[in-house]
Length: 424
Image 1 (spheres, helix red, strand yellow):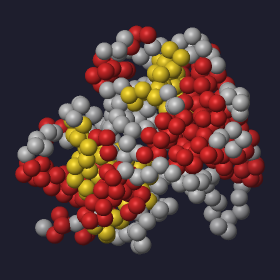
Image 2 (spheres, one colour):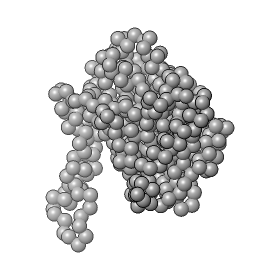
Image 3 (tube, one colour):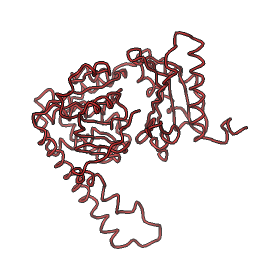
Image 4 (cartoon, one colour):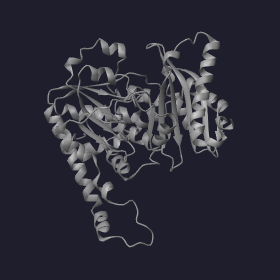
């Protein structure tokens, strides 16, 4: 996963300051039992809603000012290589809001749409998405774009990031619900790791009047439906939703199309997904309530079967966390990468911390993975060992090495005393 350490410019100081939640900074998470709380604690706790509203209003105003400064511009919206419903719907909402300011946006991704629900969402709504490979991007005249935007990611999961930033396209905005992945040099930054879905953040923008949804406009109805799907997807069908997510869903309920959403949700699993689930069941090991499964090689187009297999494994009795991984081969780019997904029902397990501790960083200090509440993922380049799949013995040996190393790193955290490395 790519990360781009940068520094904030001086004129971003107000925006950076606004990123700090004053409520979280000054109000203790909980008072010590039996200890009388100070008067200032009570006052601050009573002011929590107003402080949060003030921060929200400030962000909305900063976003409006950013759009005003870029009237008539063209921007690129960069999604993660394998965009999910939250990313797709949020990017569409950004595009529609930007059009109110005469800003034309193109939504691009470098990977693949392989999850059946994502394919159905794009096809049934006509969501304006474009696939740009790295080779395609090199043929584009990037000088026509005055800015790029990262939605539901921070550039670390997009293969186009390095090239586009290297071409001198500045970052206009980063809007995400994941924890900070590294320093960001963006004109507008809004990170809300306390929010379950980026779709919730964009619905709040709509509620603030950034775009007035109209049920008589087909595009608005389809975007609202996409946002409802994104919100539903990242909150586990609202079972992990918080107050802000429920409020966003209530607002979207006035505009979305239930039949269209149902059609997206009823899309069937492909044969490749069923095969991945079967392999994960066959090869899983269960230890300390963790289920770990390496499923060998996958085609690039079937990458989304990995999180679906993890979703399935975590439903097993006495399992609270599942990790599924595979070596994914991209014939177009002639690269291989180990891709993995984590799903957990354990509230005290932080996927972001767990994955970063398990797999660490590359030579440039970029983490191989991260996550959000109850879900995470990682990508580890195969590098020099890429290719050679036509030789079955070589491919098998390579898989055995990567499979053993990943299990070793995971078991170091799960049960270090039981890890074979400690037997010597």
